[in-house]
Each structure stands twice: as structure tokens, then as C-alpha cells.
Amino acid sequence: MSEAIQLAQQLLDLFGSQCIKTEQQDCIPFERDWRGRTAAKALAVAIPRSVDEVQAIVRWCQSHQVAIVPQGGNTGLCGGSVPCPSSQRPQLILSLLKLKAIREIDCDNDTVTIESGCTLQEIQELSELHHRLFPLSLAAEGSCQIGGNLSTNAGGVQVLRYGSMRALTLGLEVVLPDGQLWNGLRGLRKDNTGYDLKQLFIGAEGTLGIITAATLKLFPKPFQQTVAWVALNSPQDALLLFHALRAKVGEQISSYELIGRKPLALALKHIPSARDPLPNVHPWQVLVQIDNLDHTHCAELLGELLTEQNLIQDALVAQNSSQAHALWDLREHLSEAQRLEGPSLKHDISLPMSAIPVFIDQTERLLNAAQPGIGIVCFGHLGDGNLHYNIFPALAASSTMELEQRDGEKISRIILDLVAQMGGSFSAEHGVGQFKVAELARYRDPIEIGLMRQLKAAWDPNGIMNPGKLFEIQSD
Image 1 (cartoon, rainbow, N blue to C red):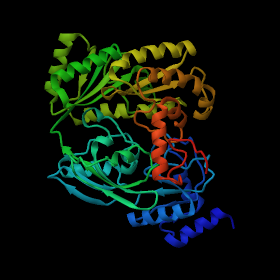
Image 2 (spheres, rainbow, N blue to C red; image 1 turned 180 degrees about the horizontal axis):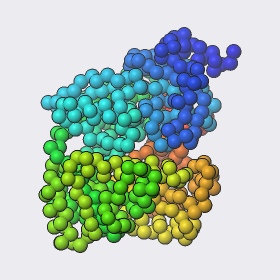
Image 3 (spheres, helix red, strand yellow; image 1 turned 60 degrees about the vertical axis):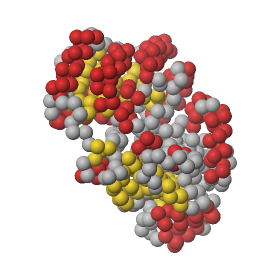
Image 4 (cartoon, helix red, strand yellow; image 1 turned 90 degrees about the horizontal axis):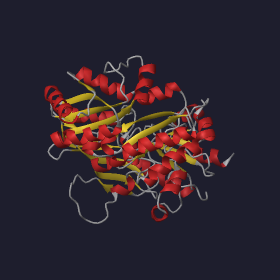
């Protein structure tokens, strides 16, 4: 009997078939990443039913030198929640999907404490029941889990007003690599007592421990949200409009999404329900959401700005929730439309807002010079400096893998080198995972990399936590 089979049998004997899955048909959905870019065989899939069981499994893995791959909803885009094919060590997937308890909701403190397996949508709906808002909003909110949102520091469409998961989190509970449980579930907005340890686990992609619960901030539910679709001539005009709007309504702007013509055209082509909100074709548009402002006053505000600054080419203000939902539905289908069009090279980048118009202009010229006929799909969260900058090369490919092998290095260097020169980041909200390890090594300061490696070595000296994510595997 092979060592892997013996180890899997030990797990079954200790934790039972309700917790440990070893059959191929049971494991495959957990072993393959959401985009189908990678898959690697796991020793087994563990689905613990309690935090105590998570601790016991981690202690067993530590004693047997089995690597642990923590997994939430497995909706990530960088391969961070699936086994790494280059690892020579047995890898156990540890799914948090059964840790779904709502431990406490404290409306007087505007906090909720939940376990990591709760989906984002479940937390949104719970907050709604208590007339509160949990503002994180993602396209995958029906299936992504809070543990994964924390491990990747998820962002989404309302970071502009409310911040990413780092800003939304007050406390964590974490199972450490040796099986100890750190209880940092404090609902405090002020706690100046040394290192803020929770921030080290948020965005660490499961390389330092397993987040099992969190205390999150809630907010007053806006009494009204008005959504507008505004046409403009350029990203520079979009930036000027953003600042003009903020001068009028301040922090009431909760979303400000920039959308180029190409991604909109793909949505109109591939999504049956998609309709162009405006009668004429425009090169750029923004989707704006303003909290606590009714549609009449929003229309008046845009009319004032049209008269004062001549930035707006056309605009539609949603008159009711159905129209607002249709505009957001169009925005949320942009990624799906690209998938239906064919393989593309995706870049999730962030820049200082002031640099975005120059970046878009310079990068388009550089890419067209390198590959005439290239297709550029640019959209994203202009209000927080995050662009999804995706490329359809002039010569089509049968798969994303073929595309990356043929064109990926050349195109990505043009884009990401300019991002770095402008003080930006190659990963705004998708994380590093196993697909962007080389970019982390290339673009982050060696001192930063060294500090991160020292932290990893101190907390996980045997390297069992999610190997191959953030850093290359040095030895197994």
C-alpha cells in the first residue's frame, strides 16, 4: 500500500467518511480551480464540521508533514485554493463549507460574528433582516465564502466608500499551523495594544493559518441608492466627473465604475438580456451609485455638471429599482461576456487614480505597436484605482493556456512594467495564488519579500500551509 493511501486511510479512520472524502468523483470539484486553469490530485478532501475538528486535522497534518490547502467557495482567479502541481508533498484540501454558524449579531455595536463557511450573500441577507448593510459586493457573492474573502482581502464594487475586507474586519479566529486556536474576535474599533495580528492573516491566502470565524462591521442601510449610467469621451473626463461629483455629494458615492466600449460591446453581443442604456455609441461610460440621494436630485446634479463643465455626453438615471438592477446586471456580465468571446489575457491592476488616464493612453499605444489589431477590454473600479485590463490578441487561441504560452509574457510585461513605473500593483483584488508568484518576485521590493518569508518561516516552519502560493516552493 502506498504512503498516500495509508495516510488517507488514517484520516478516514480518525475522522470518518462524513468529514474525509477520498473517492475521485468526490474530490475532483475541489481539486480544480474555478477557471479550469489548473488541477492537481489531493490526498483527500477534509470537510470539518467544527473548529475543534479543524484543529485536530491541522495537528494530524503537522505530525505527518502533510500540506494543507484551505478552501472556501473555490471562486478565486489565481489558483490559491487548489493544490499546487509542483508540490512533492501530499496535499490535503481543507474545505470550510460546513462552518456556517452565525455566532452573534450585535446591532447596538453594528457587528456580526460568523464562521468562515458562510457565503457572502448569506451575510448580506442576514444584515438586511436586521436593517443593516454589509457592503462587500462581488459577482460571485452567491458562492464565495467569507473565509476566502478574508484570505484574499476581497474588494468589489463598493470599496470606494466602505473599503476592502481589511477595512470591514474587526476581529478574527484562526487555527494556526501547529493546531493552536487564536481567538481575536474583538468587536472593537479602537484597540491599541500591540501588533494588529488580524491584518497579517487577511490577504495571506491561507499561508499563515486557517481563518475559522470573523467579526465584521455593519453599516446603516442606505434609505435610497440611485444608479446612473453616464457617457463620456475619455477616462480623463471620467476622472474629472468623479471629482466634480464628490465635491457635490462627498462620501455618498459608493460605486464609480469605468467601462470602455469594447467590454460593453461584448456584453451586448453575448448576453441575451443586455441592452445599451443609451441610444448612441460612446467610447467610455461610468456606472455611478450614490447613496441617500433620490433619482430626481441625481438627474438635477448631472444636469448642473453638464452645464458647468461640459464633461457629460449623455446620461440615464434609473427611475426605480428594476432599472437600477438592469444597469448593475449589465456591469456584472462584462466578465462572462469575455469568457464567451474566447480566451483572453487578464490583468487585475491598481494605480493611483491620477495615473489611470495616462496609463490607458500609453498602454494602448504600446500594445498596438507591439501587436497591431490587438483587442483591449478595459473596465473596473475607477473610484478606488482598480482596472481589469484584459487582452484579446490579434491571433486567436484555442485555450487560455495556449494564449499565455504564446503571447502572455510579452503582453504582460508591457502592461505590468508600466503599472510598476507608475507606482501601481499587478494584483488589486484577485491576490497572488499560484498563478502570479513570478510577478510577486519580480515587482515587489526584495526587502518586502524577505520580510514576508521571515514571517512565513517563523509561523509555519515546516511549510505545511498552502505551499506554492505567494512564494515558489523551495523544498518539500
